[in-house]
Image (cartoon, rainbow, N blue to C red; front, side, top):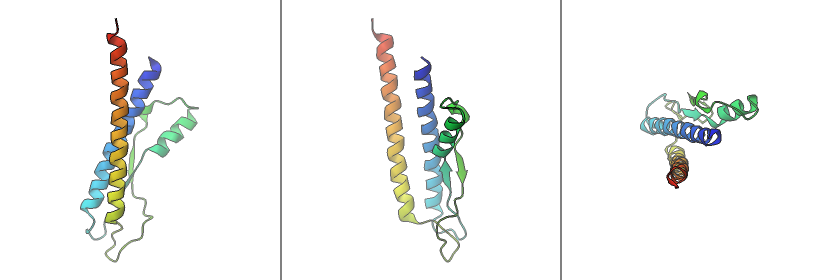
Length: 120
């Protein structure tokens, strides 16, 4: 059951990261015209990969927390804002698809375990 547990943990961590990412993208979009606002992103996949490399593939996924950070790599407009609506909407769509995929995988895993438990 350890493998199933780690799969659940990984999917749950991914869903948490995507939820936080959805909030940061929404914040970016809400502040598209706010002077001086700098866009934020969520770092998770890199942190997870780093933890897996350091732990030689064994890592407590629930110990890897997504981080919100300001990349400050995008061009700044005259008002000091670096949010571009088209890019953020693209990120929103991409994130929604990732979130839906993770949710479907988790549901499939639960159905599989339910079938095993209810088999007589």
